[in-house]
Amino acid sequence: MTGCPFCAAVDWGTSTFRLWIFDADGMVVAERRSADGLQSMGGREGFPGVLESHLAEVSAPDSLPVVICGMAGSRQGWVEARYIDTPAPLDRVIDSAVRVEGVARDVRILPGVAQRDPSHPDVIRGEETQLLGATVAGSRDGLFCMPGTHSKWVRLRAGTIEGFATFMTGELFSLLGRQSILAHAISDMAVNPTDSGFLAAVRAGMARPADIANRIFEIRPAQLLGFAPAGAGAARLSGALIGTELAGAKARFGTLASVDLIASGTLSMLYAQALEATGSAVHLIDADVAVRKGLFAAARRFWDQT
Amino acid sequence: MTGCPFCAAVDWGTSTFRLWIFDADGMVVAERRSADGLQSMGGREGFPGVLESHLAEVSAPDSLPVVICGMAGSRQGWVEARYIDTPAPLDRVIDSAVRVEGVARDVRILPGVAQRDPSHPDVIRGEETQLLGATVAGSRDGLFCMPGTHSKWVRLRAGTIEGFATFMTGELFSLLGRQSILAHAISDMAVNPTDSGFLAAVRAGMARPADIANRIFEIRPAQLLGFAPAGAGAARLSGALIGTELAGAKARFGTLASVDLIASGTLSMLYAQALEATGSAVHLIDADVAVRKGLFAAARRFWDQT
Image 1: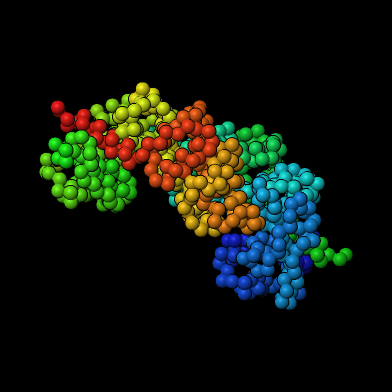
Image 2 (image 1 turned 135 degrees about the vertical axis):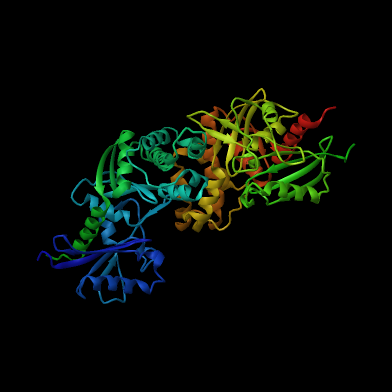
């Protein structure tokens, strides 16, 4: 049956739409990526049309079932798949999927996870599916770091999400680098993960998180007064923010001795370098692979009756 | 001679222009405020015209001398008044003023102060004049906090600026409150200094600066999950950022047991409440009064030959 479509799987986020067609062994037989995220959706009505048009492009059969994770399941999405609460067994994420009514196709949307703790209220949606994928074949214990616009740190024990924390690191980097006074000191937002200024800033950020709002400001006078080259701004800003995130994660989760890093691309290299430079043993898991494995694991539970 | 113009004094910043006419006793006999800051200047040519038009509005004599502080003395300003270096005696700020060439009137621009320390490069321009004013009649020792878009903390000993640090607190508050995901949780940027949520966030920010990027994110899920009222966002964000600034200032300057706070308006109340709530004894000095006194002290040294 290899090559024969078993299901479609979609990671439907705020800004992106990614679809894969899996065969019964979980191999990808077709793939689509587009900018049809929630931001570009006119309203609830648009969801079935966008999904069907992408399925048509890959000639998916009318009967092919679809599993979806991400913001499509939020209140602003297609159909709300309500948060399940911590402590949240990953298996319960699958069991709590919501079936979309009013469409001919079998479409199921996975829920996010809420931490209903007055001292640390927080939510994730999409990352639970990456965790599911990352742990399908391996450890279901550990501290997971999922960097991004809003970096997520998750403590998993025996396949259960015990607690998590979101850090606005990526959004701070973008806002500060493009729209603050620091924009005058940053000509290029690209950061080289092996840049010595990046790693020095990570170490300083982790060692002295309290003066973060001072140390990032210093990026500009450092150039004005001739202590730093003009091209060093982005690396110093990124390093300072990531280092402060690591200090915060350590304060929250006790130790970063061993970290499972679920990430892709440059971000995976930046965080891997930062974590290793500050003493963590890093186990890197590709984020794209993880979300596909997580979606396929859910699909198997829904539709594999063999 | 009371009421007879002795000099004009201008605080010429990035976004504002403020002018006062002093008599020989330092009393204000006329005043102008406008948005003619550097941002709205077309180029170097515009400076004499803007100054003369404001002087004409208050019927200042053609011979009246003018002292200026602030960004008009920066490289992007009218005439560069180069930074003097730390340790910087306040008297040297006056002695290092630059006289503007090519204008009939005697116009002098006060310099800023640079901290040429590779580990903490920083600059101030305008705050040195507030310090001058704050210490004309009083203590020339102490730790001074000057909150703003870029808050400045300055250690003064025997009338000499030993060192200082800039924190981007105000700019972070504005960027995060208006342009980040937190904007969805903040309907109104006004903060009440006696709001209990503000003070709780200050204390948490000071006690746990490392997880700042997590705690500000939590403002949004706190509302989504029903733990915080919709109107609480700005107070929590402001408190978290100011609390983290206080932690950074303490890490840098050793103790905040006694702080001279140079500020005006709501900001003076927010910082006074925050400092007192975290154990500092606060001496409040009005920032508008301080800059006027500083400019007048300089004018007296330039032109009072009695």
